[in-house]
Length: 111
Image (tube, rainbow, N blue to C red; front, side, top):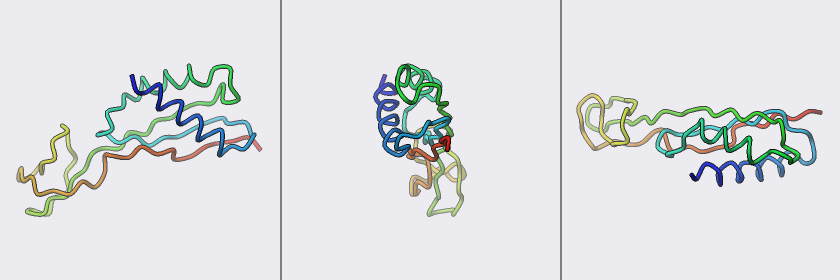
């Protein structure tokens, strides 16, 4: 369950960025190809922040779909499976446009 170590890493980033201010919400972008289960990450977040300055801060996970651009037919298609293949012509000559993200998008703090 790597979501536990990911939630710890997010917590470290947030504590540094918050600089002592109370955090109310953390928003994370998570690409479909990252093999992270959003519900598990959220559950781990609750365990990770319990008893810390981040206790009570909500974690919001924004799923980012995997999208490819095809060099053959020029289509941009969203992947349903983790196979880098054009959804229109089935070519493997594609460029990944999104789906590998894992980013702390925003942190809401009290002033």
